[in-house]
Image 1 (tube, rainbow, N blue to C red):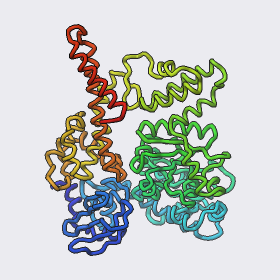
Image 2 (tube, rainbow, N blue to C red; image 1 turned 180 degrees about the vertical axis):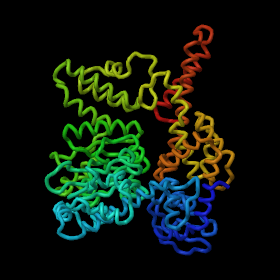
Image 3 (tube, rainbow, N blue to C red; image 1 turned 90 degrees about the vertical axis):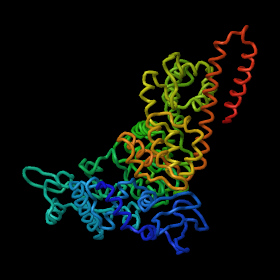
Image 4 (tube, rainbow, N blue to C red; image 1 turned 90 degrees about the horizontal axis):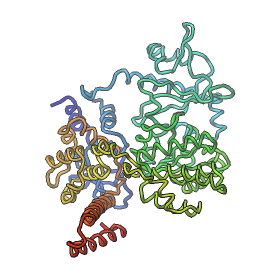
Length: 582
């Protein structure tokens, strides 16, 4: 047995699932099992069952099921490794080789935790400038505690003396950006600042943001990047808000620490913020673990518009449904929600502009649409936006733009599609044919959804069987599905660890990505139905192309009956496609 498997087995044997789940779910003995209300969906009659003998949980309402590690992953919104670490820490289990923690990182986490405690205690000595500042910003004590807000005093070496007094080396404090050095002397990097601990989704303190009190620059100072702190990989507040984001299936992304804290205090709790940098692909993927529906709430100035446009593109490229809202009167979310309240802010959220609407609204402001030439220039730029959409979405906006600009749909469509036969639509973007071969190796969205459904409940394996050839079309998808077929046993849930172990590295990584990033949001039946509809529609489209090809090469004189039959079948299929039937 490998050391990694040994660690998993030890966690399963020592972490009683009833104890772990019982901390967050009220369980009552029911025969040989325990019963309670499911934490993953709202229900009045308990249908959530925990088996102590089998060490598994199952909800007969929403279908959630798994072992103790699976529960910790789903409830706390952690990936597999984070769940392993959480349980190992709580039960004093040593993580074996293969799952070994990086000792350098562990020391960094410990130092940051001690620094956070130091700032936290300093903040709670009443009447210090940091406490007065946050009180003036109308942040309640319970909110301050929730976010672990602290204070770095005005002296030059109080944190340095505290941490070195605990035995931590100067080099490590320098590496983490807690202290600085000049002319052989060490001094605290954060002074006279309100301190915002930055905590990852595993609950580890990875860095700090400090807001200057009074005059001085920079206004906000973040920890420098280190072995544990990479701005591009983390989001502020997500450790606290990720469950609300997952529950509401929508995230509001703001610019600053105070925006997160104020909105959270007002009751808008599905919120997070980037760390003083433009949104990155990694941050988008992190957010997508919890929802695909994201609203950007940035400032309405030129910098905020540029940030929103960049954020739109990044989130759209990660296949998120993204919208933008700009707070009215030039206020940021912090000011707005304090003045107008939660409901007024939620009204802005509901009025947020979708991807294409926002981009087109920004373009409109840059052109004089009463001028013929500027109307043409506007449409040329608008065509670039429409190329990023699916054909159906693009068609809707083409009609709108034709009506608005009094230019024909055909002309706009030609501007969008061009005459380049080497371009074909793939997922809403135009992809040169030479690039399509590389794309074809990637596991498709349809394959990912079907695999995730099977992993969630093995009943979907049986239901997918009639369509397996139409579903699994890429090498990666076929390899993962082959592994599933080999391990499938009737009326048994798949052993995901055995499945991962049976795959090569590339396919195992693809499976891990599916497990972590494909979100079903308790809509399994709807998603399965949508997938089947897609399969059937794809079949109709494929048959339509075959018929068109056959008709194009049929001899009208020699094949009259055949042409009539093919034409009739083609018309029926096109009618079915038009009516959305599969």
